[in-house]
Image (cartoon, rainbow, N blue to C red; front, side):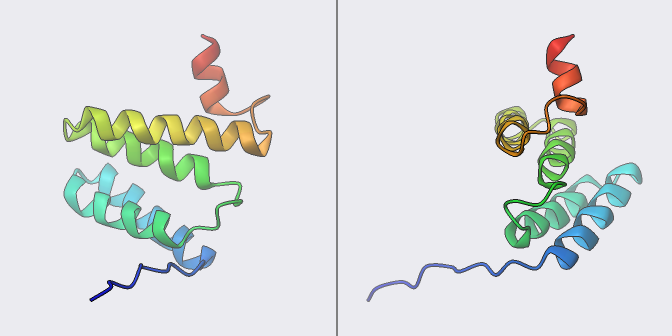
Length: 100
């Protein structure tokens, strides 16, 4: 039996709401719940949306707080790669952090 691959549909308004909820949960110290929101947000986010790098960066911080260093590093790398691909490097927080 061949397993169907998961096809994710882009729903940027949903991604934005989920990322906002993930951020609020992170601030409230509810890290596991925050992770669930970020995973769902990234699953439906538009790969060209200007906020995608922020989603990855915020998720990386949540993962780091949970001690999941390798996963956090992976998402930080995705945040940087997304910013570079989108040409956001002149004024972005990631660019500033990597310069200094």
